[in-house]
Image (cartoon, rainbow, N blue to C red):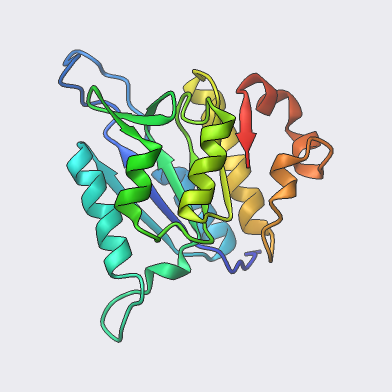
Length: 202
């Protein structure tokens, strides 16, 4: 039986397998099957886009921002209140084709689109500095920012990502404390996994 949710997801995923720095790299992930499962389970809307370069990512963020209000012919992107980045990461940054995209740059590109949204980074080390993570949240006026503080195993982090998305979608009104309070039901359920990944939310 389908559950119904008031939340919707935008996922921006890097071309994991492609790498100019290491052309022999065959490592690849694909979050789309997971997102399709959530879409069917919760009857929610999901936008999935893959990007290869910094320019690609900037284009998508600017497009969603400039089309956020919607009209009779275009979708209202403001209804997508969960933004999920699936890519490589670096300290306080995303890592795209050998180049960093600092959190400060994401704020500039989004220009208000992250306001009142949940931003989840399924990437290594992007949340490594708690002070900078809180600053990012404040600058983009997000409801919540979450991710991992260290380099993480791809399989383990993917399991955590789906657990987080599933829990977010199950709530009528998202309670940030479920992810920031170690005594919360969610944190207690996945404590071992979250601790092994050095998960952090603010």
